[in-house]
Image (cartoon, rainbow over all chains, first blue to last red; front, side, top):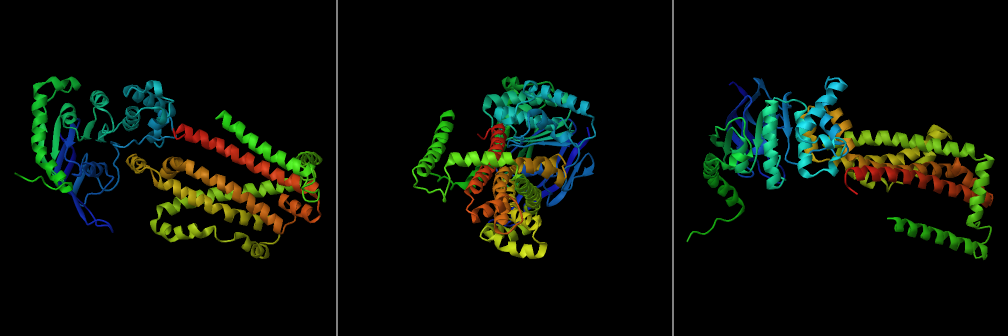
Length: 270
Length: 250
C-alpha cells in the first residue's frame, strides 16, 4: 500500500499574543496514512491532536515540515478529497437535514437528480432516512453528529478526518456510533483518521493507533491492532482488546500525568 | 400564551376607554383632541375620500426605498467590516456613538445640496437606519460558531459563498432585529423630515393639519402611521418567531 498522507518533520508553533507566550504545540512529527486504513490518534488533552488534524485538513498551516495528500503538498487550503467532521455540532440550524447534507454539493457540477440521489443514499447509510425534512433542533445530539458525518460522506472524500466526533455523546450511543462508523468505513472504502480521547474507542475502531505525547505532541507509539476489516463493537470481548487498550494506557499514563501536573501541584511523596 | 394576548388587548382597550371618557366628559377639550371613536371614523372617511392617497403613497415609497437601501448597504457593509479587523477597530467606537448624532441637523444642508425633493428625506431615513443594520449584522456575525466557519473552509467555499450561504444565514436572527429597528428609523426619518420641510407626504399633511387646528385630519393620520408601523413590526415579529422556532431557540 502506498501512503495517502505523508507528514514529514511537521511542527506547529503558535506565535505569542498579548495574553500568551509563544506556544510550541506540536511535533516534530512524522506520519504516514495508508490508503483505506482506519487510523486513530489518542493523546493527553492539549497535546495538539486537533492541531494535527487541522494541519492535515489544510485548515492550519504547519510552521515547519511538509504535509502531502496523495502526493500533492497541502498548504493552507483544504485539498479536494478530504472531509472533516468536527467535535462540536456543526449542523446548520436553518436548513433541514436534506439541505444540510447537500450543503457541500451545491457548488458541484452534479445534476439535480444525481445530487438528490446521493443525499438520499447517504441519509440511508447514516440511518437518517426518516428525518430528511427535520431540522437539527428537532434531533438528538447523536443524530446531529450523523448529519455532519453525512454532509462529509456525500462529498465522497477519500480521506475522512474526525475530531472526537462522539465526544459529546453518552457511552452507549458512542459504541453504536462506532459500529456505524465501521460500517460506513467499509462501504465507502475511504481512509479514516480519527481523534479520540477514549482508549477503548481507539482500540475498537482502528487498524493502527498513534499515541501522542504531552505538549508539544509527538508520536511516541504506533500500535497495530491486526483486526479483521469486518468487525464491530463486540470486539471488546476479544482478549486482545484488553491487551491493546492496556498497552495504550501504559504509553499514555506518564504523558497524561505530565499534562495534569501542569494544572495541579504534584502529590507529595511520603 | 392565549391569556397573555387577552390581557394585552385589555390593557390597550382600557387606555382607549380612559381617553374616550376624558374626551366625553370634557377634561380633554375638542381643540386639543378628538375622542378615539371619532378618530377612527375620520380615518375611515379620509381613506375613502382618497384625498390622502398621494401623501400616503409618497411616504410609503420613500420609506421603502430608504429601508431597502439601508438593508442592502447595511448587511454588505457589516459583512465587509467583519472581515477586516482593522476597519472594525477603527469604526466600532463611531458606531457606538453614532446615535448621539442628531441626524436631522443635516437635513437643511441636504436640502441646500439636493433640493427640496424626495432625495434629502430618503437620505435622512437611510442615515438613521443603516447603522442599526450594520451594528446588528456585525453582532450576528460575531456569534457565528467558529466550527461553522471551519466547515465552510473544509468544504472549499469561497469567501463570498461562505458569507451568502453560511455566515449571513447563521446571523439571520440578529440581522432581523436590525431590520425591525431599521423599519422604525426609516419611518422616523421620512415622516420627521416631511414634518420639518416638505412638499407632501403624511408627515407634511400632519404638520399642515396641525397649523390649521384641523384635528379631523391630524389625529387620523397619526393613527394611520401607528397602524402601519405596528403592522410591519408584527409581520417581522412573526417571521422572527418562525425563524427562531426552527432553530429551537423559542
